[in-house]
Figure (cartoon, rainbow, N blue to C red):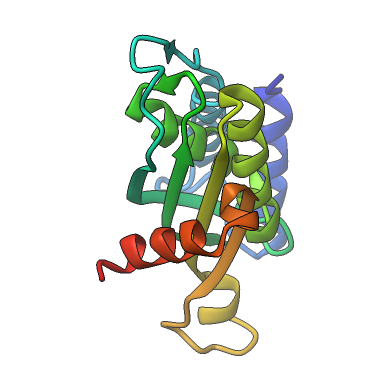
Length: 183
């Protein structure tokens, strides 16, 4: 549960800590804006995973690629962002395609590391859909590397999580990787 008052206090202290005046015009409402933003994010973390059995005999790969996402690196609280590619092979049920997008949003709108984000999406879909297999690839630029530290913008970090047929069957894995590359 979001505690908006604690967020407001923390942001005000943060602004003071970096030498800013939290009472100046441009920053006066910032603590409240950030508290409302996190409250909004919390509301996007839950959704109904609607499943359809009417296509129960469909057993080929379902792929949604280039799902844009934004998250915060839990180590520096700086954004990382990019795209997620999700595929699954149904085993009796399919889900609404928007639910794949909502799954990405639900796990990305929290302080996170890309490796965990990738695993959480795959694990959730495996649990909810009970498919023959799930493949998730996440590609992202991390501002903690681009604007601080190494100060080297433009690098893309890629992580993957493969379950079931995507892990065990080389042809399925190759098909997935070719499809997300557009080959």
